Amino acid sequence: MDWVSFSGLVITINLIGAFILTLYKLGELHLLYFYLRRGPEFAKRARAAPLAEHELPRVTIQLPMYNERYVAERLIDACVAIDYPRHLLEIQVLDDSTDESLALSRARVAHWQGKGVDITLLHRTDRTGYKAGALVAATPQAKGEFIAVFDADFVPPPDFLRRSLPHFRDEQVGVFQSRWGHLNQEYSILTRVQSVFLDMHFMIEHVGRQVGGLFTRFNGSGGIWRASAIADAGGWSADTLAEDLDLVFRAQLNGWKVAYDASLVAPAEIPVTMSDFRAQQYRWSKGKAQVVRKLLGRVIRARLPFLVKGHALFDLLNLTAYPGVLLLSLGSVPILWVITAHPEATRYLAWASIAFVINTLVGPWYVLIVLRQQYGAWPRALRKFLTVFPPLMAIAVGVTVFQVTAILDGFSGRKSAFVKTAKFRIVGADDRWRDKVYSPRQIAATTYVEGALVLLFLTAIVMGITLHNIAILPFHFLLACGYAYVFGRSIIRA
Image 1: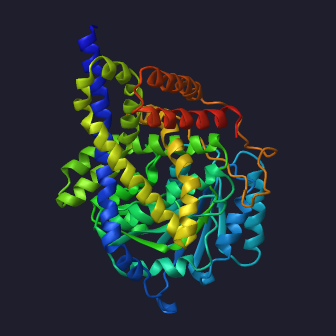
Image 2 (image 1 turned 60 degrees about the horizontal axis):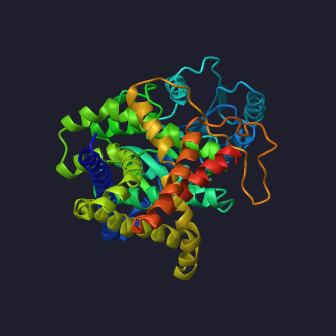
Image 3 (image 1 turned 90 degrees about the vertical axis):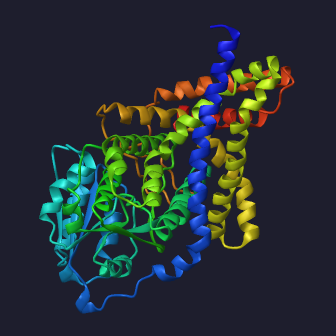
């Protein structure tokens, strides 16, 4: 390849990466527009008037879990404590555990059965379909007209059912989703960053989709399904790792609506180790890629309003932001040589500048809104911003390699095991996980690629200084820090 061809290839890689990232940020900006324009109005009307006692329907709560010795009893007890008439509430503990967790669940179920609670334990020795398989097996046995789902790391509040069920007065509502809370938000930098990532999704994107009349997510836990909506949409399916996204899109394509109330919070435990964070993100990204592979054509062919279809496609395809960032990152190293040799090449990089400007505006805006809601007064939110935003940006770019690997894995159609996220019942600053079972044991292969990228971007920093081209220096510094953080915590299994 001659120098001209090489330069053209490098510029093209940068432009493609910048174009993908720009589209992603424009989609986020439009959701932010909906949120800012009508979010306060939505918040006022989101809380529905309570149902009278004679209006309360029969509800089944399903608790899918696997090897959750530290949190299984906490979840079961929290669901039993939900304020709802005993004769209208059924609890199904779907425990496929292979360790002593199963004995703990059995004992807790027997304890509550002895006190008159309608609670049963369903155990499968064959974990076919993983969580989705457990839901498929249990749902035909459910007595409830409505089915609530809570993962093992959740602690639903006592008023959860009484506040969520009124949304189903609208016969078209097939799903209700609550906002996820965070039991251990302040535990570490990693948990603080994750809480912001999640709240950007729940506080801004969910509200934006609701007020815009767009497709909204069911996030797999902390929500309720109308049993007839599950059946009408074709039921739970185990052919993706994102059974929640798969089912809620199929339901909305069939005309069902999703209700959301950001004021109803279902607290959950955030992963405390990089290994578990990686496992969770890998599973979510691979599952979403599988859903894209499965449903993209159906969404394209669906008779939907232009804006609804556009945002449905954006919601499915926004995972391409990770390949966009990776292309922009890798392309930013050889571009140093190209710009030095051919200064006129900078005019082709206008898209990269536009992407940088949009990201500079949208990213901090999202974070500031979330921190304002998390911490109240603006002075405290601004102080938190200074400590949270830099590591958030570093982690956002540092996870790119394993996210892209997960996406490619999902699009390939290759089946793989459901790697669960370990829960250690970590809530306070003094809680420890290192001496507990389920602690991280393996180092993912992509970790070594991340280590190599740390060296690459450190080299790029030196190159930029040597070539007197420091325009991209902040980006390379961010990349080096991000990959170093993810690599370091993965290597020491922290």
